[in-house]
Length: 147
Image (cartoon, rainbow, N blue to C red; front, top):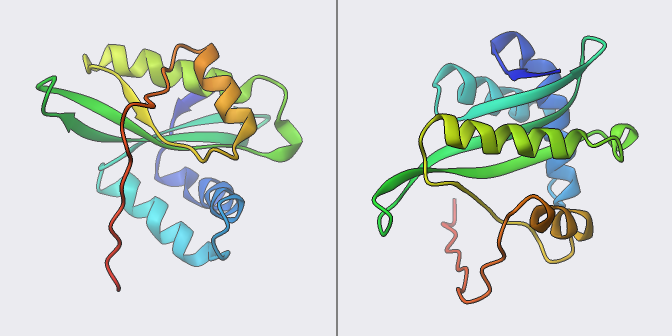
């Protein structure tokens, strides 16, 4: 079952979020993950959908609202998608992505934007199957502050 996350889901989502960060070679920090997820939910600056199976959260997708100046419309940044390793291959990621697409239409936005590493073989095969178009005509740059 897919539903929107609420504050009571924080601990379970934070556990998955920590695993997600580890997948992207970040150091585990469950306490900070709990704080981060709790803030996103309470401040309502992201929308998190969870996939529940037998009262356990086994996957999530997190969307952030952004704007496209050229389209002059709101869109969603699909920033995080994660499914427990033990639950992969069961189309949970597909279900979460389709739910995010439905949500983008329901909220009358122009679409979803996502980024993934070139080494994410599964994601890079999955996204085009669900209608995502690879934009290889653009360069993606990132400037990081030194905190």
